[in-house]
Length: 304
Image 1: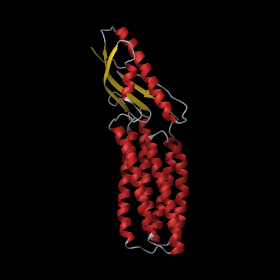
Image 2 (image 1 turned 90 degrees about the vertical axis):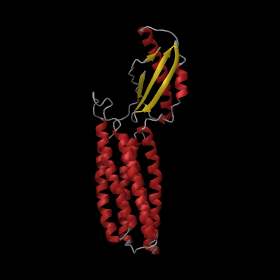
Image 3 (image 1 turned 60 degrees about the vertical axis):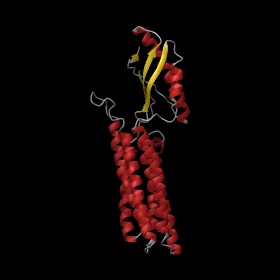
Image 4 (image 1 turned 30 degrees about the vertical axis):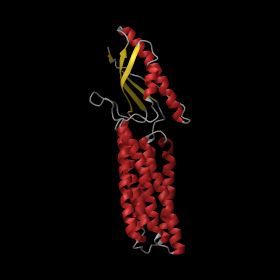
């Protein structure tokens, strides 16, 4: 028996991603130049993070487009898992970049450099405005799609990094405490590690086809066993194909021999029970989303 539960959402806006890509290219270019001229490691680290933002946004955009492609005989699920792969890649790059920044920040802390703080202040302010706009554009889609969430987190953390760099620039300008640049870089990088690890863990679980944390297999079995003539449901596998589809596969034992007609009747009852249970879970977790579409396909597979 194979069932999948699909809840539909508003189509993701590719143009928002494109707009964010253009903004981040501008931010990156200005911060690289500004960081080299001013000598600010925090500004260069922010630029490096922005560069990873551009890469992650491009990956997210490509994955978003691939997801819309139709399935075929050789690709039975189409490219629906492309966005999970994109989230995994983005989370991995976020962690790698953060570790490199931590190493560089520690080195610079023991050898602080004089920094042109005014340039740092202006460029970090520009980064806050541009990244803030991108964050607002992607916020809605990030709440329901792991790929968009990975892009959103990249942009949100970079906006926070720019805030930290701005504060550091003001401190350096008025108090000449240039070691603050290294400390802020270190704190930003540590935060990135934690955020990246959480996203990496989530995407890995989905790629490995783990049972979603909000699904109780025992409760599903209990619901199916309520159906007349059903003896046992076993070899159960529940996983997320992507953010929109929940799949279930299982073997079904009957208490007695059944005809094909009887089997179809029982199967329909089971699907009603399982889908009602799945919708209940979904409604509990949607938090205000107001539309659910349920679609099922049945693959006859039973044990005597």
